[in-house]
Length: 417
Length: 147
Ligand SMILES: Cc1ncc(COP(=O)(O)O)c(C=O)c1O
Image (cartoon, rainbow over all chains, first blue to last red):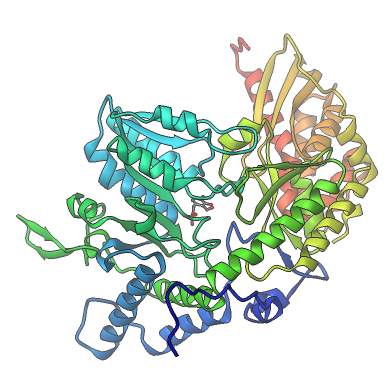
């Protein structure tokens, strides 16, 4: 039977109870209550499919990659390079030469800062970021600023937690050499209009890096449709392992960049006089990589696609709406981050109860949320608060868990009155 | 885990109405404490008379445990000499970290902090003010303190 390409069936709804069975950790109790895990934005839990893929690799295929003729080394190399192809498809990059494995988002951004920005920028040049960035998308640029004498500019956000787009656009100029922006804010949930921002930056000749750590788990990301030059994300927020991440870079840019770290795997030939560097992407992968991490990441991508990225996004949006309505009803709750377009992240404060106390009380109820500054201290400063409590949702969360969150918040208010 | 053990009435009361709260000017020394985990900040001011803390105040934003601990501390150390304060710090430290520590009567209201040890993530909140006090006292001991 032929199915025309234009006829796309609506995403089937997630069967959450079935999804939950894929995550063994969700069966455990915390402080005598069934765990309610609302901290996926910090790190998501792993499904059995990921754990098993890693186990299968470790028990059947492990050896070093690109190193030997023996069977295991070949199997490991195939698995590792197969994972790279899996990632390419996941974000629709043109070539696996554009997929560099890193430790995570942080390392990807630092790679671009040191290998792209540092050799090119100098006094008079500008880097533009926004007021809602994670420290991982601030500090590497401050380092480049201090190393090169370039200027670091910050486009402001408004009280809803949205980037003031007109100001962002006005701050772009031919001096802007690099723009580094979050796709989704981890502290506020704001989804940025990255496509517009990228186009405007390109019109001024700037190169754009997108920090996709919080976007990849909640939506389909197509780096070619976005047109970004670099895109960084982490495996552990996408139901994959920790210690593995991806930097996508456009081939022409990566090709022109010097290597970042030196060592094995990133070279073709070495003598004491001269070394020739390996081709892309290995030029940027010095040393033995996190092989099992890439296997787990590829399995996580398979898993996410088996559920359907649109289905996950729709499910999370329902939870976000439900939780927002519940919390808005509660006296003393203020939601921090009320952008029109948000991902499944809900930051809030409760009057008279410090977020840290809230975290402890909710934990006693078995509800895991994040409290603190979320590695976004400038966001906290902007809203003039020391910290927020943050509930974030993943494919395995349920409406009943939102109700447990609300009940635990009632309990917190009780303790403090 | 019993929340009532952590958030005892004394703690809730000192959180709501912290004693010795606010700036002190002039003072002999002040020090700032910062708990990067929760974003808590605390500034402590001391005025010394010879070897004794004549007056002490604090200000800042913090969680209930850190605010109450600072408030209780200021009440407990006012009028005490350095050696007594150091001893008290040692006993508070044991109280917060050792499972079997029994609060002795001399701790007075500070004994209310004993519930914190069941919540290891919160020990730093309770000890922040004491670290900060040590720093302030060290400064006040420096021969030329212009602060
Ligand atoms: C928006 C954003 N950027 C960057 C990071 C850093 O990711 P990682 O710690 O995995 O390198 C995070 C993770 O908290 C994030 O949420």
